[in-house]
Length: 124
Image (cartoon, rainbow, N blue to C red):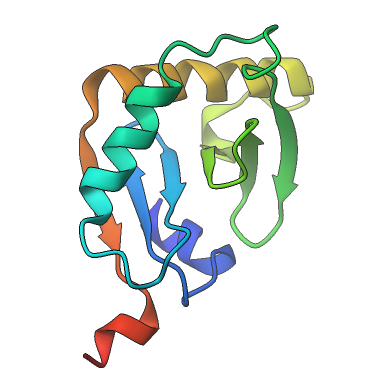
């Protein structure tokens, strides 16, 4: 999944991948504690449910990495759902609900599996 995400996320921004596919992108390339920031964002997001204004989602097909981004109200928080996790021909609502379920699991466990540091910070 890390390789897939690296295909479409900008290298200039830091991002954190959680165990079930949720990604938090850092707004500031100089942010030092990416993991702590990402955990805080998911803890804040934990109470958001589909159907509420903040719990709505959109499903975006990603060709660079076969799968979908399930985006939420926050443009810096999304869940990547790999094509291999979804039955062929599934409706967007099915993909979206799978993404929301993964997001909620990540918000409960807060298990970081990868931290990507932006290219700008690597030189320092």
